[in-house]
Amino acid sequence: MSVIEVRDLKKSYGTVHALRGLDLDVHEGEVFGFIGPNGAGKTTAIRILLGLLHGSGGQATLFGGDVWKDASSLHKRLAYIPSEVNLWPTLTGGEVIDLLARLRGKLDTKRKSELLERFQLDPTKKCKTYSKGNRQKVAIISAFISDVELLILDEPTSGLDPLMELQFQDCISTAKKEGKTVFLSSHILSEVEKLCDRISIIKDGKIVESSSMAELRHLTRTYFTAETKRAIQANDLANIQGLFDVEIKDGKISFSTEPDTIDDALRWLSDFGVRSLTGNPPTLEELFIRHYSA
Ligand code: ATP
Image (cartoon, rainbow, N blue to C red; front, side, top):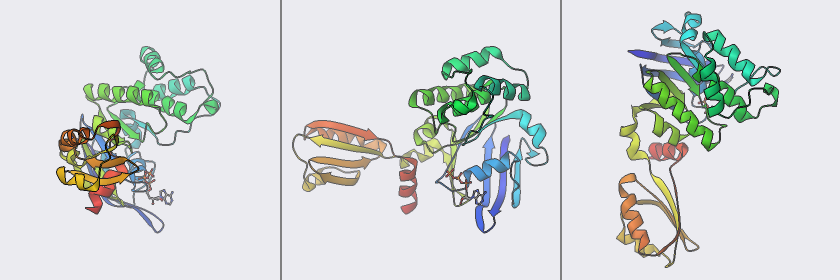
């Protein structure tokens, strides 16, 4: 069953065409990644799904219900984390969590303490004193505390430190095990790769690629920078295949390679005596650039 169904959705802000015929199908129980460059239309699409904005054309349904007309009943079945979390400044984090949980049903106090502990949030502080990351934690805890069928998350971890990011990933895995559907808009490729079953890439207000993560993996090259005891010369590259974006400078080499050829690349590198080595997974922007400039 499709939990989210979007057909030919359009949205213009004056002369800006933010969505130009968007199509989406998110199935029950899957973690779905919604990714795309800045300004691609992700937040606009999410705000239409939430009934916060009117589309200029096309259709959008959640659980088969119209996102605009049926908004109040649909909202009981979903939780949302916005990309910019604004909270009531004079309430404490704990009060906001209680308030949002009660709006969606009964407050599960055990679950609340578990989540406060997990995300190390002090709930007694006033929201106006929280940092961006802590405001985000309030929104995350409020979303995971509720027993809803659908989580719509718009860049939920952009302000979190790496430890908290891991906690968030754990919560998503649990939600998936519980059969919840997760719609995750994110710029963090490692997060998307780890969590999502399928993704759609949006660019200029349209979906340009939809596939399972397994199908997309061939696009993910890792970037390496190495310092070697014996300097690598340009003609040494003749002995190795599958290196891209090679740069040799000041005794260092940097290159990218695909998952299947990492092994060969490292073996080749070790012949020169490796002094230092760093490896970085590709950023989402790099993935886009490679994918679309090909
Ligand atoms: P990001 O990844 O940077 O958050 P996004 O994919 O969420 O971007 P949107 O915020 O949906 O992108 O914006 C899509 C386009 O619509 C952009 O060109 C943006 O400038 C424009 N836009 C968004 N909101 C408005 C608005 N209220 N008025 C005018 N233009 C807008």
